[in-house]
Length: 365
Ligand SMILES: [Mn+2]
Image 1 (cartoon, protein in one colour):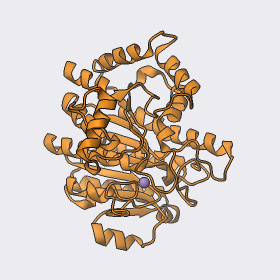
Image 2 (cartoon, rainbow, N blue to C red; image 1 turned 120 degrees about the horizontal axis):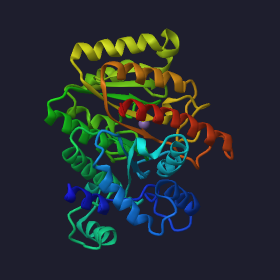
Image 3 (cartoon, rainbow, N blue to C red; image 1 turned 90 degrees about the vertical axis):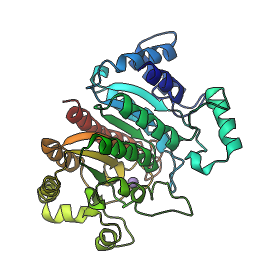
Image 4 (cartoon, rainbow, N blue to C red; image 1 turned 180 degrees about the vertical axis):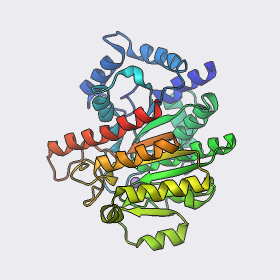
């Protein structure tokens, strides 16, 4: 456990510090640290102490920020999601309800170590860890995978709530979770809320990005039909195309509005029970919600889910299946549609917080 905590203190940083800035949002960052640790002289030390304490309560869900938007491609800005989401969250719940581990350390120009040459990796290791030969990865997705593997190994029955970041961060989060559950012999499914399918196999030659993370985790599921996509409505191809091509299951937003949310719930739950699924991972792209609830995001889409519908689906799943881990991604606080619309930001944060608090309640049981 000591090794685990030592490694965390290298590859993570205090909550809110995942976006590397000196002045931008400095007030907001120090405000968050005040909420978390009180008016202390050395918040870094308080954070390190909190890492140690967090291992004493493995039943409480763990919160992790992944402030990476290098995998985004339409509109950046989801790197600021975790800081703003925590602001809203901790004004509503007591800190003691979760173990907040902090943020993945992010070099904002990087995505995954496999895209880097050795010289760059060594220079980045020197910058992040003070040692060009250090054992830890340097890109956000690679560090996230490293973190998750270590997390599930050290706290095998704990659950993780990750805050993105663009949707590429779900690749390491989901992959590590699925690999871990396979080792535990548990049957699991992926529940993916999104306006988009994220089913490209690559985008401009890059295989891991916001629009292409899903195909690369399908082989880690029992079979691709253990992946359920909910809320889809912006796609160049019809539902049948995606289902036939990948073998996944989709429930488009239009179906929910045509047949009601309960019909979709029944269908998914019956299917999960028939397959003997015990646990689910929920990946929640905020753009699954209608743009009137979630406009501060890279690609807001009309005709989407209402927050209470998403909550209903999640609660119904939690009645029969463990919510193993989850993520909430693509909240981009400085992005506003229409531009200069602060109401849109507040609405997005309130809606996202509703989803987040529900996860915490269900996973903290
Ligand atoms: Mn997505």
